[in-house]
Image (cartoon, rainbow, N blue to C red; front, side):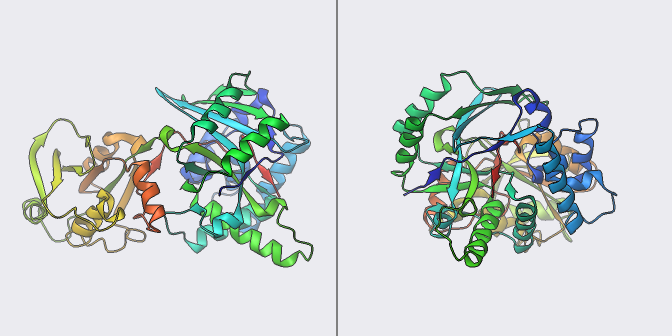
Length: 412
């Protein structure tokens, strides 16, 4: 059963939260982060991507970069921009993006349950990315980027959360991208007890986003436990920062693909081969797929609707029915030579938040030849794959809206 503990968060002065809180470290490159933080000395990007304050040629994974981020974190605490609660609390975090709203619980999730697969995964992780997060957490002495978890919705938990958001929020601001961030601090011991007990009846949590952050935290927990002869399992290092949302509030966007070239084929030859596994429509005006099993393709200045021929999508498990998996197995690998999408430089992934106009721009620029827009993976499929111990193809899900770093941090 799931363990989600209250913890004393390090959090921003509410009057400065909009200036401090920043997008996740991994959705911006260094140049984009440098531009975003310009003119804002309080931006948490100075902690999560500290290379923006250093020589542009610096290795962002060098020890001095992590140390610079830690120094910035200590400065923000010393100057009162960030402060830590004096008791373990829960925190409720609401995000509103357009007409979509979702409300999650900020809590400390169990590294032991991560290792035991009570916290279930659906992606492979890369050791180098785990190492990066481990160094960042260890040198800062804090987990500043939350892991995005989900669970099958429970009416009892919904009611507990609803009872708390009726109160005045402790944080309420709209970020520059138009997404509203609202948060409540839950200090009442009886409410904390009820929330903790309710989650102890939840059979599993699922990592939606943040596989490298959770894997790094679990590795750190093992290392600290091995070095601590008085280890008791309750030390802060045994838990990782998380925000957990009910599955029926999640919003997943498509994760699209563009490919540099058609190998040695011209457009007509490629369409002929593609037509062996997919039905190809005449040119269409609407570039967005409308359901699972549909993919739209931009080639030669034209959008076409693609659907799988009979029998192609009949997989034995959930992951083999995903359009991302089917596209890789039937088109990207055999036709376009993209053997390993994790490492092949000829393929580029475009988050659905950028829209199909970005796919058109990339192809029309001549840097890429063909683009594929995919219908979003459902959260039900994500959970089913994790339950089956399956692994999604890389870049299958794009979650929006994004949680902001520094809303709440977990000190080790």
